[in-house]
Image (cartoon, rainbow, N blue to C red; front, side, top):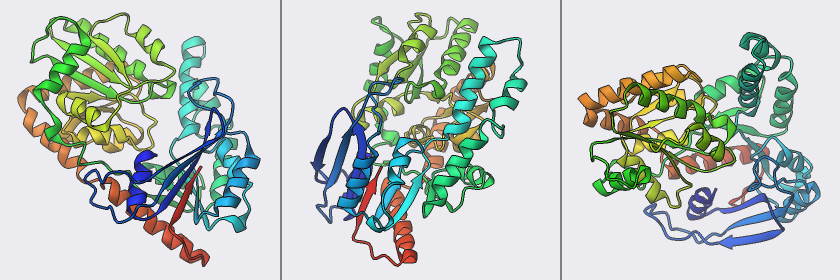
Length: 415
């Protein structure tokens, strides 16, 4: 969200984010340094308005947006040209209470395929814990298209019908939401910070830093470095990546290889336990600074991803922009990122398939590392950069405002 504020400000638009927090507070910042974007035409401000609420039971670092009256009051005060709904949960309920006269157009930002994601996670846990019932039985009960998920898709349609457009980042999500009767679905793909995520961020020093994470001992410079990037949440399925890596190590214990999982979240301790104390699996936590993350990605050998529920897969795109070959599941936004010349694909949620795909990738890398890295960079170059992303989004908003007969004043609000 900070990057979005930065780019929108430099494009001349005011950006206000309303989000839950520990207490009511407001932060204001200007658009900051140009950072290579060459867009410093304006010094428009960006603001974050926090609405105090209780901590989330699952992840205490997040808070719940319960004060619907305050949301409606903020919208009435700010009078945004564009009112964005970024969550189908409490935020959506609050936004729907805003009066139509208090904003220009309203859009629904589809960031998370929450229905099939959590149905799939629940199905996996139930099959694990209740083995006498088959996966097919649970899939019929709670899986995609089941009666249990039908009311949730009804909720999504209800929100979307009251918005001027629903924005998604990947083509497969356009098809999916349209098939569920969601109206006015528009694709706006995410952009990449190419000035940051670039192949020449790779360095010997970067590799040594990654290798040093796994052991106090000196490792060989030619050790294989696998990375994963993302939040440690249940739907990200880091268990698949960790289990696959451990099986690879069991099959080839002589190979010097490490797995670095970058990120943080409520499942981190469980994933540490999953790694069974292996010194070759390290979790350094959240990396502050995009340049530092890019250096780590570019200096690794391959990225392995476990989540089949991504609506886009920005971390995969950023890794490929750094020239990193990838191993991805065959479902979700991760599958849409797959390019045969730059990676391998495996059957989603299958540990053995993930391990075998990673082994195939490493064999190919041994034969043609430069070719695979170049193919990854070329594939990522087909996506927009971050400036192009938000220019496209603003152009869409201008069209929607024109249809409503509203003249915009270059402001944008997000909830």
